[in-house]
Length: 63
Length: 274
Image 1 (cartoon, rainbow over the protein chains, first blue to last red):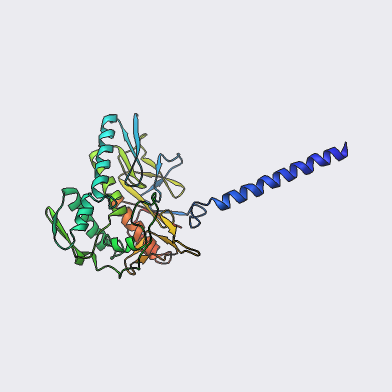
Image 2: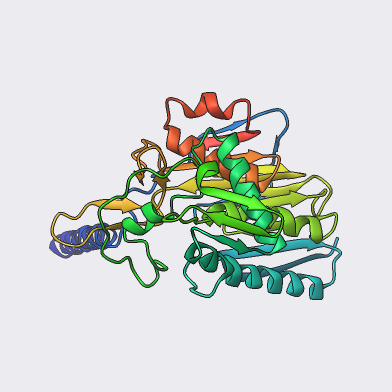
């Protein structure tokens, strides 16, 4: 019984590691642009502009 | 309130028009106008009005009201950015290999040409006509998107938002009276009678052919005639118009992170650098 539990745990761990490795391999070979910013920048806002909580209806972006 | 919107592709980008209480037919007409301007202003279409102007470099050429105004806007952008936003870098852009839509892929580039002359020295604009100095050409690129967004918003009524490939202008109080919620570098800003634009080097970039090819992009620094070597990859700006936002975003990107805040502080209403 104990051996079977350990086997299941080892199998699950191996499966998780394999999935993580496969995902890492996939994303590293499918990068759209290696120069793309990794995280959003801080936005400096003057008093003439108000910030909102609502989800944006559209966005400005690089095109 | 009734929000109408339409999405379509034009100007090499995704376009998004939104209005409050306006018949959908008006949006479809607006879409038709943007598509017709694309046909006239694309440098990738040999029969476009812009391509004909470039092909006629060295002599005066008749231009439409829209192209005349856009060329004047390019001269203003050059002045207001201290020469950094320079529409006359076409030959430098072509030398990078960006000779056709990047969907078709870049072509082999040539040696970089010398930096272009000052824009007022190579472009003359008179009522109904324009002349480029022989051996020069203009690429209106992002400036056209901003200018068209401003112009279309003024045509679409008192409460609308025009987003042409990320260059946008928000007019009126928006769908619920608090302004138009617009995403700017991950934040939501409520824009009203304000424009926004983002300039970046990473999206239209590619590697030159061969082993160890260089990463090049389309944003030319007119001081060198080569792709900008800025430490910034993306700048978003909110300003009083989409045209102004486009100009200031591009200038700030070319200046780099050390000088951009000083440039933007008196000119922009909001900005982000990355």
